[in-house]
Image 1 (cartoon, rainbow, N blue to C red):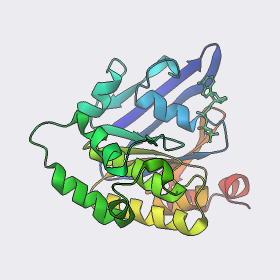
Image 2 (image 1 turned 120 degrees about the vertical axis):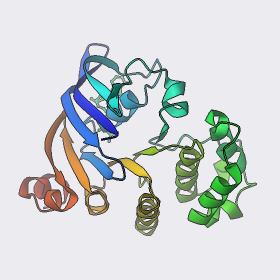
Image 3 (image 1 turned 90 degrees about the vertical axis):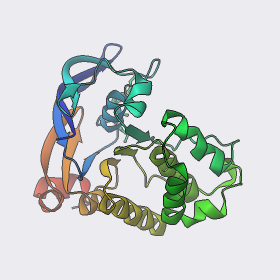
Length: 241
Ligand code: ATP
């Protein structure tokens, strides 16, 4: 088990956003968290990555463990540098006035001197050839789909061993959503462990090995992707009947 979230309770001010949730991610898996708006999916991602204030959710109970060790006292920068956990955030948050290459380069701040960055740039450019074509273009002029590729590429350039993806299909046309999900499958086949937050439950459950369904800060169902796709309650609430 690489990552485990145990009975986690989280608040923003006085508002409780997570009510004692537990889930885990094994090495090599794709695990998805699905659920409606406000269910607490992004809060999970921000808590795991130790997002600093002012947006930081406050842990009031429970634990988050990486390889069995609590990470609740880990500095946000060490989450990337030492735990090799990286987030591709909701809304992409790329640096629009920087080029594609500069955005990717920024993410290497966490790397050791001996990292073979050329191989990694090549890996990302093979995965997303469009980024290679646009490498000297300012990122704000990229299409939504290209910006999403850049957000994923930037997270990969940190040298992460677990990739956390928050809504990678948001705002993309259907054909680009499928394309992005094919790339995620390829990444996983190449060895990347993935924790995926997604509103498109159908796509996410088809891709993921396992999934958890969240509702108002609780986990209300869990199982393999196939089991959840076949679960009548999940079908009714999240898969359009
Ligand atoms: P979405 O799919 O809309 O992003 P989500 O499942 O990711 O939803 P969260 O963004 O984690 O849900 O929100 C969970 C709850 O926490 C919501 O009630 C939300 O209003 C609240 N919340 C989220 N961020 C903050 C914040 N910075 N300050 C106060 N409350 C917050």
